[in-house]
Length: 276
Image (cartoon, rainbow, N blue to C red; front, side, top):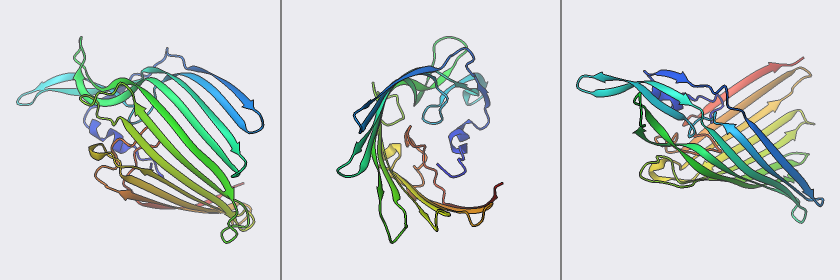
């Protein structure tokens, strides 16, 4: 998750292939949400969504086709087809105001049916010959976290916003002999935001950590810090620093659905803007 969002690492293996995208034109997306407030502290919602998959890794539903025979090598695909399977999503989320500690506890849960999951390529039956690089599997996703405002007089004259989250995803009907994506993936995130100089300077710190997953990646972290300063009515400046931590050789492998694969890049950016 770089500041510039360079997704080239996802598509690097497709270099040299003709890339076609089969955009669904006759697949409708729709959903429903039912929500309720229980008392003064608890808010809940239940949702359903029929979704056409448009995600990036690990949800790339790619088929390889248009094979040609190269002497001494054998059949080689020349075309990569991006497909967009339809899946159903069932979920729920809540927010609870826990007043004894003055925190907001929040949580989400979702079950995704027929979610594309990276796997060893296999040949589909029928013509033309086609290799699939994914399997359609049910996934469970959940998040649990809390938000809190605290006084830090030494840091800011106003309240400091803190937030922490634990995110987990689980591939159901798991087959370790075919799937190249891990069964379970965890991510932990934290953030901190505060204002200074009468609301003219905003400071933000964000961090994410993915525990080790052995040969399937993980063991990586990223921190990002930024300062936004409105030094006049129209002019502002922003500086942002990103640092990557962990094994650079496995950083881009299977980090999860909630948090994109961390990119092994350290980066500093500066922006000068004018608003009117």
